[in-house]
Image (cartoon, rainbow, N blue to C red; front, side):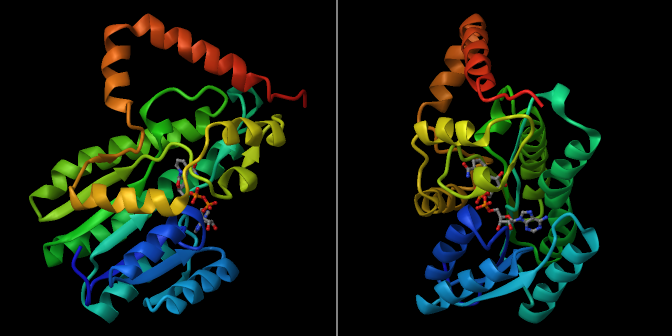
Length: 273
Ligand code: NAI
């Protein structure tokens, strides 16, 4: 990836995957703008990047607020005269069975995971179209590629992002803009610790997650940027995903059996309200 005068915005850049992508991009010479609602962690991430000799700045932004996103993105564009990367990465997790959820739960997760990404695109896409280049990377999830019993709301948001991103991938091509969906499986970040567990035992969920041997955010960041270099519509680090897709398409009943098992295991974390 070339360096020097490039600039990128990373929402959710204060922590986890966004922070690791920020560090990796800065290492490659990109000026990174870490946009997050958490100022303390954001400033801390900036210091970490600067200590490594990279260029970074923090922008306090709530991605669920369209105006804030518009202002932040336009300010960067005006200052640098370009926008090379827009990582719409900020997200929250939510576990819970649908019958335990309220409309407020749905609104909370949709506002960040879906509207947050839309706000980023609405702000950055016209600017990139005007300049004739740029890469939009939206963090979805492997959960956006299949069922996720006891995390239906989260899966809803991530399926939306996969649909939006893979469609935009082809629309934006004509304007010289690349668009990719990042679909990590389990990455070792604070997301599950911070996330909501509605009538579910968070400790038990975290135990189940740990068993999946999450990959480090740094490793995922390198993988993600490689996917971006190849302009892949979906960047997913599950090595057997394509084989599994073919297998489950040929043998759908096996897939349904597996999903029922996943549902039974995941339900063990449910607690009576
Ligand atoms: P994280 O919790 O470490 O980082 C998320 C960041 O987003 C935090 O810094 C948080 O302050 C910020 N954020 C949350 N709501 C915001 C808002 N309204 N406005 C601005 N910033 C906000 O989590 P992680 O794991 O790094 O998550 C990044 C993305 O990766 C999310 O979209 C998540 O859904 C996705 N993902 C994570 C996986 C994992 O295993 N960690 C797996 C699949 C997808």
